[in-house]
Image 1 (cartoon, each protein chain N blue to C red):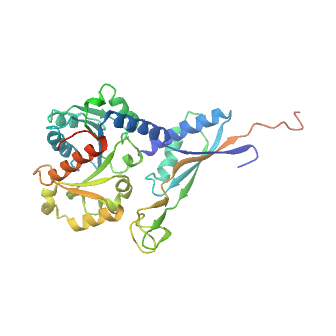
Image 2 (image 1 turned 90 degrees about the horizontal axis):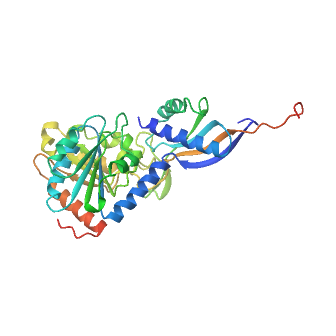
Image 3 (image 1 turned 30 degrees about the vertical axis):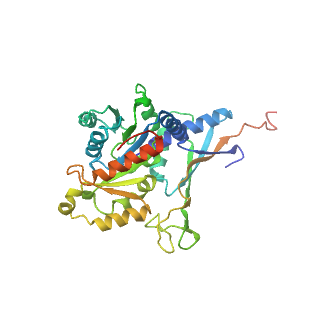
Length: 123
Length: 228
């Protein structure tokens, strides 16, 4: 369960970023590669725990799962990997040595509360 | 997203803080001329026995030390102290892996310049340690012949982040009914070209190859006049 440690880093990073911009986080967008070694569901529940009691409590975690893409030396093409064997070329089954995508574990963006604009009524 | 929110791009690795600390450690190790090897495996694969043999053998001619991570006990450090190398335990509490910061803290009162090789034994776990860089020069993944030939296929991420595989307890191949050919093939499936050592800490078979290898790598990397 290293997802909790990762969620704690994520919350710390998001709070820092929001404070720097004088705002509050509505949602955090995370890019998560299927080869990152982090389980989406575990990260979701860890996020809830980690954000409890912080300014992120109640904010949403939106995870964009990134599928794997390798360069297959045999096919001489960029290929997805197999569903059951995530490190092998989907087409010819050769084990991958060059990963182009799929290891992502990053805070991609934050949805922040916009400063309230004056309306006609309270102007 | 509604019109009361705005989207700002961040694009930062979630373990950026750990990565930065690991990078700083790597620089410190290099400047001090110490070659750092980390060990990961599932619980019971024989990390501590392997390390005990390694420290005793290398300690004859090199200045060696070890940090050992464990969830709750200091038993491993007690066992390793028998090799007479300096050993320090990092008790992680509930944390299932070592982080660069824990390593940094544990090294606080050690003079790195007094060491040639430092070994870091991670918490027994094949999942969590894969995400955390510790500043090591070489990462070993250990698996014992009693764990089943398909272990590499079940935990591909840790194999793909390790540099070297060490198959332990080879004195038990027959008793465990381990198909060594299948095990070797599975390692190569998840990490093509991976260097593999097969050895038994108990009988000593295969240890020499590993010891020669790590001494040579340390010598190359630190430029020290290490013998071995």
